[in-house]
Amino acid sequence: MKIKKNIVLKRVGKKPILIDVFFSEEFINQSVVVFCHGYKGFKDWGAWNLMAESIAKAGFCFVKFNFSHNGGTIENPIDFSDLEAFGNNNYTKELDDLHDVLSWVQSYFENNKIVNTNNINLIGHSRGGGISIIKASEDKRIKKLITLASISDFGRRTATVGDLQEWKEKGVKYVVNGRTKQQMPHYYQFYEDFKANKNRLHIQSAVEKLSIPYLIIHGDEDTSISINEAKELHEWNPKSELEVIPKADHVFNVKHPWNESKLSKELESAVEVVVSFLKK
Image (tube, rainbow, N blue to C red; front, side, top):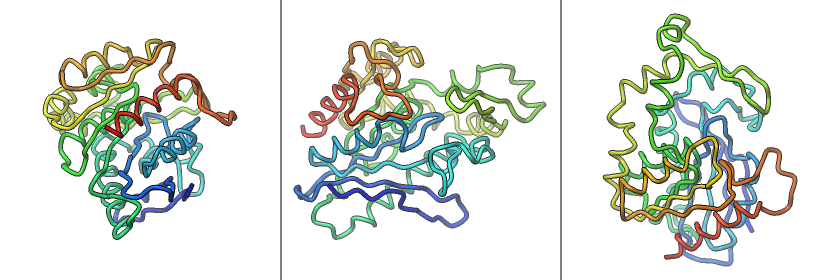
């Protein structure tokens, strides 16, 4: 297994992005799987490394990365040491990051017989699912889409949470991080960016437009994002596949840090479904 961690993608006029790559040299012509983490997430959260290894062992080149404004830094990619960046994050920045990661994948593996950069697939967890859906609907490089515990609507998260007038006046509102107990800022620009890009960020329209194979995975004990959102996604694109993982919560019964040497039973089930979908 070849694992390269914390590759730095430097960009002109933008924050750098940290990228991990997992692939086995036993396979040729491997398709690429790019993973997008969720809100308050990061590429090394919980069992994402074990998930990456499992999917790579099945014959895929697995790429995961930190969104540039997720609050981590190049030096400290796990804890949220850059809350200013976190506060300045928004959906269009994440779409831009993902675009640059896809382009990086194509150049990094150019002329590589092991990896087929003409076959790129997306996996997104939670909010990263929403970002993956939008990107898959507008970028022809994406051949298959998988969402894990995805949201079905950005507006419910942004436009209707709390007092908009107070947010506008103060310029910032705070969310507590349950794990680190940090007060994490959201600057009002987040809402302004959402409003300015409302049509592009409409998940239902993006899902209806999808013409590629789409797999929706959700746990039936997810208390963070209702399984009804998975059902909505499936309804909007009847050709999609919906797989419900019994007894799985929002993170498929994993936590951070994850000190086990193997996946939870529920995340293992999700990975099995992912691999069989990608092999079709």
